[in-house]
Amino acid sequence: MPKWLRPKDRELLQMSDLKKADAIVAQDGSGNYTRITDALKAVPEKSNKRYVIYVKKGVYFENVRIEKNQWNVMVVGDGMNKTIVSGSLNVVDGTPYVLIRNIW
Image (cartoon, rainbow, N blue to C red; front, side):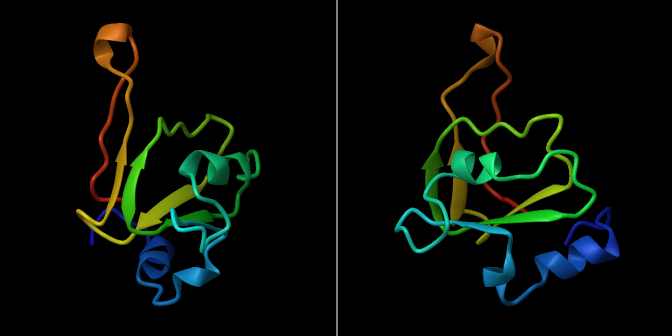
C-alpha cells in the first residue's frame, strides 16, 4: 500500500466489499458499466466527496480521461496484471500516453 495515501483512502482500498463503490465497470456486464469511459461520465463535477470506480479484471482498450472538473475520483482495480487499461494515443501525435497495469 503506498505510504502517501491518506487514511480514509487506505480504508477504501482495503474494502473487502467493492460492490459498495459508486460505479462498477465489468466487461461481462455484471457491473453498472462495461467501459471505464462511461463510468467517468457519471462522476459529479467538483465534488468534495470521494467517487470510487471499481474496475473488474480484464484488459480495457480505451482512452481514459479524467477531466479537470472531476474531483476526488478514485479508480480501483483487481490488481496488477488483472485490471489493465491500454489506450491508443501516443506522444508523436502530441497526446500523452499512459499504460496503467496496477490501478489503486
